[in-house]
Structure formats: structure tokens, C-alpha cells
Image 1 (cartoon, helix red, strand yellow):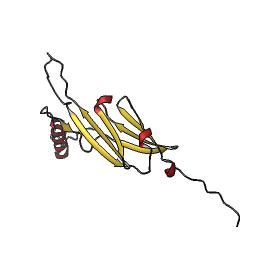
Image 2 (tube, helix red, strand yellow):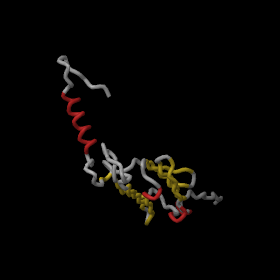
Image 3 (cartoon, one colour):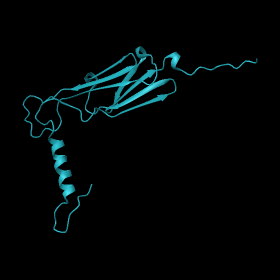
Image 4 (spheres, one colour):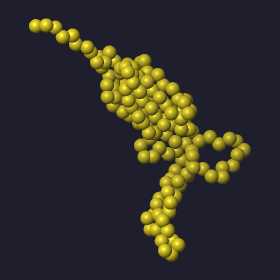
Length: 146
């Protein structure tokens, strides 16, 4: 985004405020304490693919062991916790990434077979595939003559 300069070679008031807010967000959580993902956690998409409900979540920097997924009574819960690891003997010069955690819960739009769910993590994208329950699948109704 280009900054807007006025006739006196100064940033416009809007751009000054925007830059200050950018600095504040960049500094948020840089004290080394664990922080929650802002504002609501990883971005999610949920869609149907044939007889399967697919959930994708962006979780960059999280390893397989950092994630916990549960399905209970029609609610999918995603939890993630990333530890802050600095190797021994290293000095931190700047720290914008650190320990982080999130929890997101979704009421699923259809009944599913949670025990048959599969999850894969690839390049920072978590994909969860959950088959639809038989009673949630469309049923064909035969038409008979009267």
C-alpha cells in the first residue's frame, strides 16, 4: 500500500495512524509470553466433497504434534499450541514469532462419522476429511403408481 504524502512532504493523517497501528500489532505479544492467535485463530474453510465433509485450516509454523482435533456431538474442535524454542547458545535479536495457541470450535452442518475422520498437515494447511453419516446422505425415494 502506498503512503499518501501531502504538499509539505508529510504523511497524511490517515497513513500516520495506519503506520502506528501496524507498529502496535507487530509489537503485540512480543514480550515473550504465549499469545492467542489474533483475532479468532486460523482461517478456515468447510465444504462438502461427495460423501465427505472437508475442513481446511491455515496453521503455518505448527507441527503435527502441536495440533489436537476432536469431534463430539456434532462439534469439531481444533486446538493448536506452538512452543517457543530457541536453541541453547543462541541470542535473540528480534522476536516477532513465539509461543502461540488457539482453539476454534464449529457446529458441523451435517451428521458425520467422527471415528472415521482423517487429518493431514501439508505445507501449513491442515485438512480434515470426515465421512457423512449414512442418515445424512441423500436418500432416493422410489415413486410408485397409485
